[in-house]
Image (cartoon, rainbow, N blue to C red; front, side, top):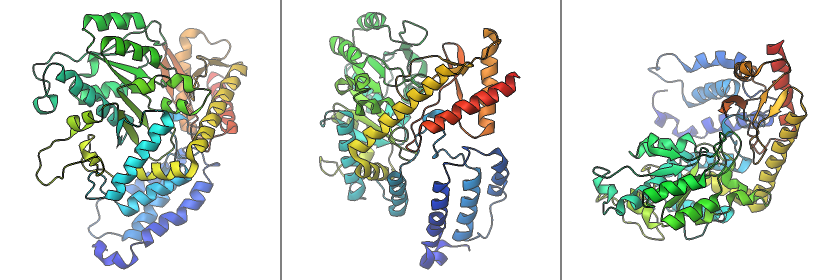
Length: 475
């Protein structure tokens, strides 16, 4: 086959290949290892020279599905606790398939009123879910990093406007460095967003009162006074090693007293707002000037999914619109052109899987899922505390459990090396996935159980495998 036009009468057949494989694959995720290194040999089938004459769609997709179902990291399963990966609910996955089927250009209303309206609806639902004011503007993005770019671009516009400069048209030339302050809980994606925006990755200053990174409010306030208050404060809701959070309400007070901009990184911690058990962690987020979160974490929708909300909706169009291209239509309140409210021009209809999953399960379903994950994380913390060779290193506050392997007889100076080797062994073993990080100078595990399939039995297996492999290494 050399021309897709030759297959127009059987265009649904390649999709049928995927559909036939989907059922057995999804039904078997509970028994599959997260990754089977023995299957990596299949990866060689992806290579070779580009064929002059293709295999045809069915044969090509059959190969792709066969290799993928064997060699992929099965992160949609219940035991992938690495990198805070959510998975995809059944409704979200079907919504994502519908996204590819319909292939809408979601940037301009005139190109797809359907995609634009779906995005408007889900942004409203998400604001309702998180307790954000309905008046906030918003836009869907591919990730939390691009959501940070969106919110911080609005902050940059606001900040430069204080100097009488339209940074969208003139850029940053001649302006001083924009002050950005945070606690030691700040995530690297915030720094990356500042790097992309030309503000400088390392211009962000942290104010921490301890080696866990908790914010030093007095030191931050003194810094705000030195810069005259016109600065950006980044509050962190859900830190990646422990799930710890900044006191958002108190940072909002600081921002209000000094006229600063408050940006909240809620990449996965925003979902704390759904449960009465953790809602206090999100208290004050409604007072922020910009808020970011991820969908492919605790919302359990497929990659790529992020969202950015901004208190003053006009700042989104000032930061990203007004291109002056004659062929692009003007926006209005009803016929929204989302490519003028965020960093992307060409955009897929990423609202559809969000719409499908929120419509399918609603507020109550998501609260139940979040609370189940809270219970699973607490259970994992209890298992760690009960194990004589494991050490819990921080209270279980959200959906991340920070611990390390610490058997009797191993001196402190050897523990980091031992845990690093154990992390490598765990990923090579493949039955469960939980990578290592560094917390307070220690090499630690930080599993995050937030896949909709995950139950207590899955973290029980994690503990068993960690102790088994640890004993082998320490034997």
